[in-house]
Length: 349
Image (spheres, rainbow, N blue to C red):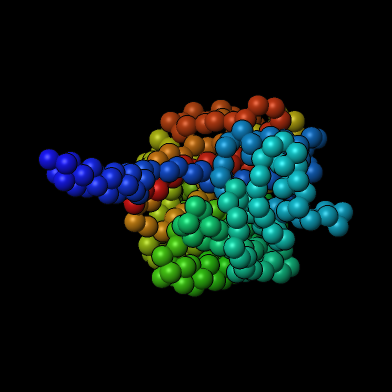
C-alpha cells in the first residue's frame, strides 16, 4: 500500500506541472495597437503635445504607430514622448525616426529604416519587438501625400489642391496615382515583411497611407463621399491585401456603407474648419489611417474602434458621423486633424 501511495503521489506531482504548463500555453493574451497621426507632433493645436500623451495613456495601447514626426527644434521626438510617458508612470520603448514614429511597451530588439523619408514623400520604419518571448515585427508608415488622386476624383488636384473638374477615367486615375511614392514604399514593406513572416514573427503595419482602400470604393459605396460613381482598386491596398495581409477594420466591419470608418478629415473644435480641410467645396472624407496584419497561428482580431471625435469636416462644415462605426476618445483636448484607429488582438497557442 505504501509503495502504491508513493507511486501515485509521484505521478500526480509529475502531472500537475504539465497541466499548468498546458494551461499557460492555451491562455490568450491581449494587446492593442493604436495608429495615430499626431499632426506635426501636436504643435498645430494649442496643448496638442500633452494631449497626445494623455490620449495614448487612455487608449491603453501596447504599440503605437505615429505619423507626422518632425523632430522640431532639433529635438528627438522619440526620446521626448518616451520621457513624457515615463513621467506619468508609463514605460515605452522607441528609437530615432523622422516622419513616422513608433512606441512599444515591450523591449525593441532591433530597428530598421524600410523606406527613408526623402523630399517628404513618405517613410516606413520597422521595430523588432520581444513580446513575452514572441517576436513582433511592427511597421509604421506615413506614405506620400502627393499625387493623392482620390482628390482628383472629387474635383481637386491631388498635388496642388486647386479646384478642377473631377477625374473620372479609371486608367487616368490609376496612372496618376502611381506617380506618387506610395507604391514604392508598399513594395519595400512587403519585401521586408516576407522575411519576417518566414521567421515566424507576428507582422503588423499601421499608418496614414494617404490613399483609400479598394475595400471602401466598392459598388455599394460608389456614390458616397463624392466618389462620382467609381469603383477603384487603389494601388497600395490592392498590393497589401494580395500579399495576404488583413485589413483589421474591414475584417470586422466588411460593409463600407454602414461602417465607412472615416479617419480624415476629423473635426477638431479648437481649430477653424478651413485649417482642417483641403477641399472647401467637396466631401473629402476617407478612411486613410489603417492597420493591417499577416495571419499568424493563435493570433485573433478581437475589436477595432475609431479613436477620436464622432464628427468630421465635409464641404467646410462640421458634420456628425451618422454611421454604425464605434467611436471612443480620451478626455480632454483632441490634438489632431485625423481620427486614430485602436485595434485589439489576442494571442493564444
